[in-house]
Amino acid sequence: MAPYQFIERPTPFNSKGGSTLPIFAVTPAHIETGTIDPIALDWAKKAGYKAESGSLLLIPTEDGHLGGALFGLGTNPSEQPYITGKLARTLPAGDWHIETAPLTANRLSLGFGLGSYRFDRYKSEKTSAPTLMIPRDADGADIKRQLAGVFLARDMINTPTNDMGPNELEAAFRGLAAHYKAEINVVSGDDLRQNFPLVHTVGRASTDAPRLLELRWGKKGHRKITLVGKGVCFDTGGLDIKPASSMLLMKKDMGGAANVMGLALMIMDAKLKVDLRVIIPVVENSISSNAFRPGDIYRSRKGLTVQIDNTDAEGRLILADALAYADEDAPDLLIDMATLTGAARVALGPDLPPFFTDDSDLAQDLIEASLETDDPLWRLPLYAGYEKDIRAKFADITNAPAGGMAGAITAALFLKRFVSNTTSWAHLDIYGWAPSERPHSPGGGEAQAIRALYHYIRQSVR
Image (cartoon, helix red, strand yellow):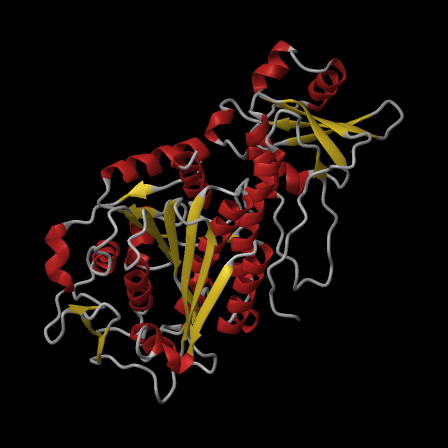
């Protein structure tokens, strides 16, 4: 199997024209009042169809061929805005269009697209899928670029580490940069020692060298936006090794990098008026004779010394050097994304990523963007009272506070120590994974918050 390379995925939309089959997206009220196509209504009543949320009823023609479909939205369609994602997995293969639906054209098309995602590159048997005609009043180009960004993130997270190690992640990063004619710079191996010592420390035990990837795109003078993503391609936990059950999903520990790349794709494809910089520290946290140890103390790029109290808290170490580097340029907006703490999952579960910022205006803007895009986010506090917990006995700070409480907050406070020049900074502690199927996702690797972030950035530079 060839390593994953950046590709433009084909969209699940029919752009060929010609005849397409109708879908009547309906609520129970449509059935009760008879306000749908008479043929569809007659068939629905004969079949006892109730238009329950996500339910599908195929409609035959008089001569027994497939003539269309009824799709149930339930009594309150706004509760599941991307319910049309189920259509992409339940409709038979063919070309379809939405005939009627009490949803916006953008929302129903994006929902269908998100739900159409399949990760089958390792499957011997491929399945055919339906396509949907994008309505004339939908923004087809923007829907497609959002799907491309989401699918890139999902693809990269789903790809196992044997095909998504540091070398392959760099190849995908280079492919993305080349596609949008962005400048790229890579520092790797022992060249990291002086300027990115924590990245080197965490990744030096792997046979694949650690590295720092940097992309620049856009125009000087436009709003300076810097994105930083955690790129731990696999996390054994290091010498503080994880149990086997905790290692099963560690291919997703580069989810921050994958999401940042998906967001960068959207920004570049939309040609937003920004001065974009993307920084991704890439490592594999492996075990070898030269692995970093509990009790070690290392000096960071910023000059702060860090005491290693747990080698399984490695993500914040590589982010520390990357954020310090990003902060030196004092961008107008600095966002980092990382699959950082289990504490965030305990607090908010897998579907609701927390974010941290001291910028109240930015926080409000992100919350509004989250609500407008139905891409959930929840603000957690950078509570100064817990600053004492990241102090270390023998160094400036510890990478693993004792006590085990408020882990997501103390991790964010650790990162905050490396951001001093940037006034608008947000840290997102994402999970990067959907444990089960949802209407807009079949489960597995997931893009989280990047549609909301893209919406906010797009609005802010208009």
